[in-house]
Image 1 (tube, helix red, strand yellow):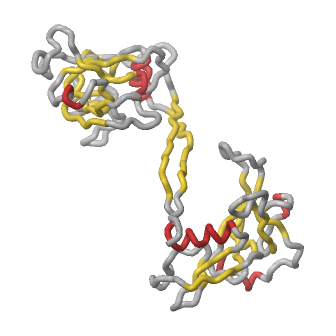
Image 2 (cartoon, helix red, strand yellow; image 1 turned 180 degrees about the vertical axis):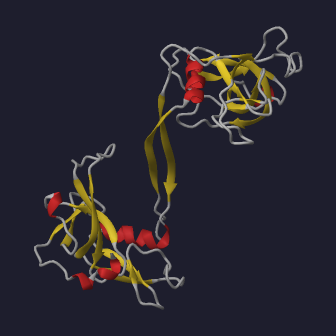
Length: 323
């Protein structure tokens, strides 16, 4: 049995959004070591504050200032922190009901071990040394060992939230939050054979035993008939551009100058178009029906791009079913 292929993959992009008056006040308040909640129509104090009532969906803006200590309502131990999490050492994820609030805030608790964490324990905010107006301005929570900080010594409800106008100097009006997903991809039997063939400068598809269509890249099953595909068929290497788009935004860590063209290419003998970059031709001369061939560079395991072959353009009727 051949070795199973795997590869680490990362999906990452910056998410930028503007803040309304409620979220702006909340994040700016964190920068100033002040925690704000909002009063809902039923009198409950919600934190983090929402712009709309969670029950009636009406707009709410009655801000109140909460305490910087609270009570753990539930928790889970994290023995192996990952990149970008609040603490590098093992910690607990906790839901904390801050004094004066009726809902809980999710954050990290710095504790020596799971035996030191319990529901009902009192905790307090540890503020970050440098604060910018983000949830990370709360570095984490820590056990509240101040007088009266033991569990039950200051029950919820003793602290009455004070109204707050939400006004701060130099308010935070927008944030950019990085979104990132790290995972390991295993291509499976069909695509593993496809990738190994590409390393030998061959393109392999699989034929459906029922409809006889050849799928590239192969999926292990026919998406139309739902039956397994096992018969391998070599296709291409040349193909036809069926449709394309012009990319004008430069991707992070991608050493390709914009604008450039990504296209769907129907390889000769295939019944499914694959996508790839088009090179060797000005972007504004790429067109439907353009005949192209793959270009490998160095010891690359897959084509770097496709370039024009110099053949006459394919007739539209020959690829219209793959557009």
